[in-house]
Image 1: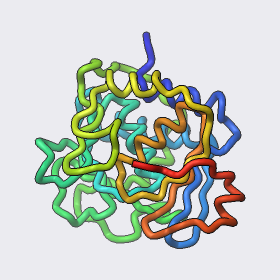
Image 2 (image 1 turned 180 degrees about the vertical axis):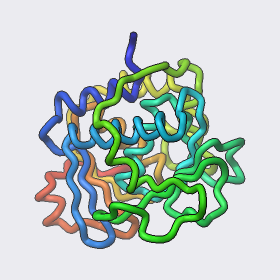
Image 3 (image 1 turned 90 degrees about the vertical axis):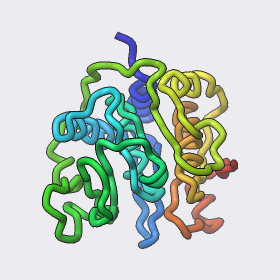
Image 4 (image 1 turned 45 degrees about the vertical axis):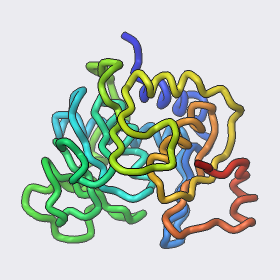
Length: 244
């Protein structure tokens, strides 16, 4: 059985970048978190298993991400793609329908099953009382296996991503099918770079991260308003900045 585009990307991360940095996060609290390719793949696998076992994920499930640019947001996108879901980005009013909402603001009256994501570096549970029925991602995800056995694959024409509203991204805009996502990965042939991604535009960040990982590179991701100084850029060996 052929692998999905996301699983192919993750296979490269855990085999070719197993011990080298794949994703480095600088948060607004001053924290620095480094994930090797293997650790990033483990987080995605745990989240994929959480999606399947807790949320009954299967190809076609529509998952809206109400999250800022954050390393956990990229984990969720990759997990949703690995399980064949359609990722929705943008305002809920512009989304046609939503089965699951993944949010850092669980009191927002979100549609479908609601999953609360704690964004703090050391949070082992959501740092506030949750409304009845809301699932606590931080409290649940660590109990899931850190390997994922791929099941049903999405059709090439199924949407992998739907972006509501404007974005500066060229590759991941509007409705992107799984076939187009696979073509994007296959067309990436540039040399490995260390990409600084500090834009608030999530589709743009996602497109840059996918291209960078497919080429064997690493992503330095920053929270909104965090701009690394020259010392940090030199220590992380940044070779490229994200551009629209």
